[in-house]
Length: 123
Image (cartoon, rainbow, N blue to C red; front, side):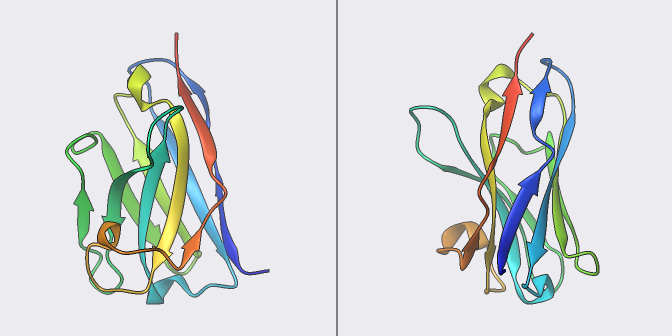
């Protein structure tokens, strides 16, 4: 079965940290730029971070810059999002996606989407 599967979401207190993982099945991730999105209740899906296909360059939006870090391990077929200094407004379903471009993947329609993992930041 071809696709992406997120894991690692859960409940965390404000100021805490969490790392979520996206694992590929049947997809050679080295041929894709990879990104993370999130969608909070009643809001549109928001692009967060992209890591490029070839050179590992990264781009993050202002809302998470300095707090969230995207990384990838092509050998393991995984992409990660390390989230630090979490805030209540970070509560959302987090999605990973794969785009076959060497560019800021947040500007392109993904080839593959995961099903999402819930992250809840609350005391």
